[in-house]
Length: 250
Ligand code: PXP
Image (cartoon, rainbow, N blue to C red; front, top):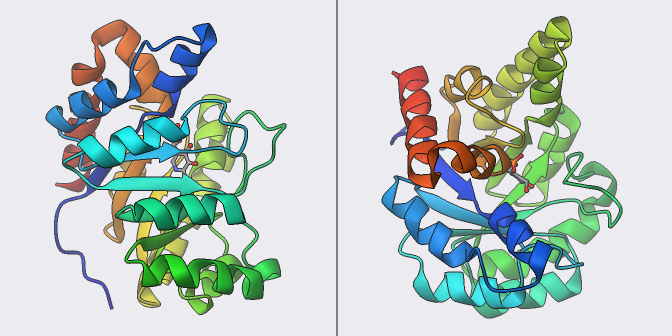
């Protein structure tokens, strides 16, 4: 069984630095530079999602991150043979298996693990053998958590998008229900021996209730931090998130 040891980790997702770069097709802003700056601002890890359509992070970005980071890389990927081969080549500290549909703007829901248990068990086995910690991005749903446990994942990352959307849209009853589900499922996953992470859509307004769950060991946050960097700079944007997380945890 995992323990509550250590402080809550912050993984900074740099995908949207690449989104801005790709809007002009050139070399700036450079996601690797952002990742190094995030490290200096207190990120405990860097997360990057190499999408099948390469709409933001590129293969060269992943190579650059592997070569230059001093903190762990969390490589987000769809469960496809192409991504598996890339992960096995780079052997990142962690891989996070996410669902991916070409038409979606972002990763809209959690992975359907329960329906694909056999395939996913075979898919993640070589990644684990290569030394990557395997995380599965899922909704706060008992069935999916049990399935993630059965297939041999070491970590689950709970999708906080529905909670954050409800907050942003002023649907506070829904928000509180989503938060209750996240709380309950964090404890349930922990009781199975899974390490619990959470992320998607988190902001300064929504981070603290999730950061306060004692079972949650890591938050992965991207879009809001990169957006906030426009106004206060990336360093200050990340430091404020770190401060809010520490305050919630204390
Ligand atoms: N965690 C996972 C598994 C994700 O797919 C994403 C989005 O790429 C995030 C966290 C970060 O979400 P956001 O960019 O909304 O903070």
